[in-house]
Length: 413
Image 1 (cartoon, rainbow, N blue to C red):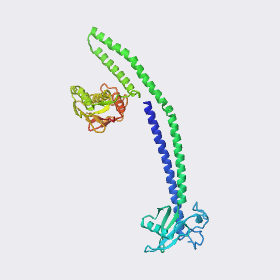
Image 2 (cartoon, rainbow, N blue to C red):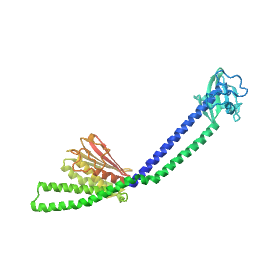
Image 3 (spheres, helix red, strand yellow):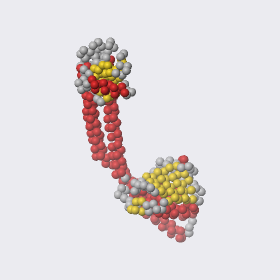
Image 4 (cartoon, rainbow, N blue to C red):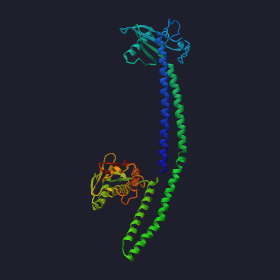
């Protein structure tokens, strides 16, 4: 159990650390992409407002009055050298869609024919801004028609890629270091729980030894008293309570042993259908004597791998629970179906099903409605059933169904 808890702690820690690292990396990446697009759009705006050329470049001609001067610092990263370091080209089209002017003086890698081809591809789309190859484009309108400006973003994108690679290496390296520390310190983290668990097991073992001897003597003395005094109501009450206490001690010890990691189930091929059928048949007379009917739909040919003694105990716990807590005159329904994973369901009618907390039914010592639901139980049976299912790598769950409570077991062995 402690090893399983440690593994779960490590898995949760790994998932948490990786989730945080991935989230931080995603936020940094998103922020940088948005910032890159915004800066490239600002450059494209400057070129489009300059009539196809970046204001401040040689032979630019007259600038529109709305353009800020070259040394304007209101746009942050733009400075007097920006016009000379920004590679761009612009293509203009008339109303008929024919290319009229092409400015490629500020770029070396693109010819006029390629510039027109890029612009025509952009105009076929519906977006006024975006990326084509390594160029950020903007579609704008002029008095003569439409224009498309392209700004080279290859260096910016390369710088972004390099910075994000560095950020990823740093983030995931830090995450790896944290995970290594978690692995190294996980034993220390679960040590208090392990100590508490060991003390609990030791207490149960000690209680078993300390209680069994006096209980055995009490029951033996009862036999002697009954032989001399005859049976009477008080002696029967003492015997009944003594037997109940002995049963509780036995269940505690069995549950404690079942939780031990080293106690592995004896897995072998078995006839699951016959095992379930035999166990259900044993409970039918008890159910009928209490005015409750049992209906079963069991595939007796179904086979699986598992520990037969543990699986018999599992079915017995579920049937005992159903017989005890079924409404008077109610019905108990058992189903065993095959397939990839054998599925066992046990349902019993229960009028107060809405009052049950199905999430807590498998907790140790949990008892719902003491007066109406649990007749002589200790709240350990379903906890033991869950331990058996877990040892078979299966799943067990409780559910409510139209005035009935049901338990579903799926085995994966």
